[in-house]
Image (cartoon, rainbow, N blue to C red; front, side):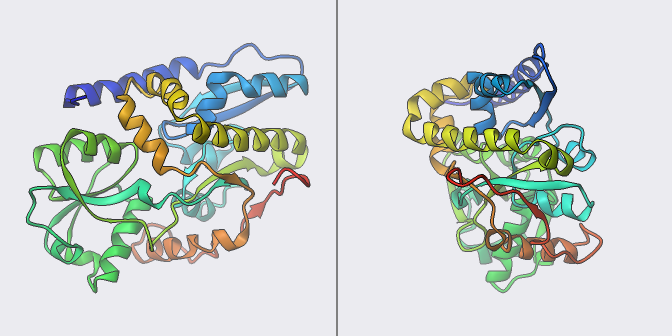
Length: 322
């Protein structure tokens, strides 16, 4: 299927509108309502929401469920506006930790390093990372791709100052890449998959060897302490949802494509193939991968102080559920 800019822009807008419509709170059952945030990239939470899994399971425990869509998740994570938060890529926890957010890490998705990459048009004279010197490279400031770009340059003996960074949010980066306003782009899925479906591109590097591109799930400290059985139920449901997506790729595409704004099935399939969706408990050894990201962002002036990236609260599932 040929993708046009209008199709992609419309799909993104439609996806947001659909998410907003679906994100309204349903009638709460007896007892407390558990508030969830989610975002466009929250695949497993979207699957659970669309299938009504948590409404059913938490309902049996006396809880209602409400869903809240956010395009930027730092505010609800930092303020505790919901109980359980959208899953986030590796860079986001650096900022929540820097802000002193009262968050407990309760689950993570395993490595998906091919889900973010540095790309150029296939016809570009830029053949290697070293060729980026002096070039205009699009990147979202403070994102995981910001770290990947900095790390890839460092690996080639270059400094970030050796390129001309164009700080663009992902939709703006897509438009700039299409019109030739940037010479290279550091970007993540689904935007990476969208542009690859639209035109031939060359991948200069993905995150392999730089970052595992883990995704983390967090819950407010107070909620984790007061309602551990709810956290355990959500954790088990996420594990099952990840297994279902991988075991049923066609059904997963059929479910997700209209929710994501009627993106072409091949784009959704590519995104799902590159993500591991392997949910497990968080361990401090995995969190050590956050340290280079924190150090890079400190050097860039994006956070104000040195962090120990492993110094966060962890929830552990009951025996047999990890």
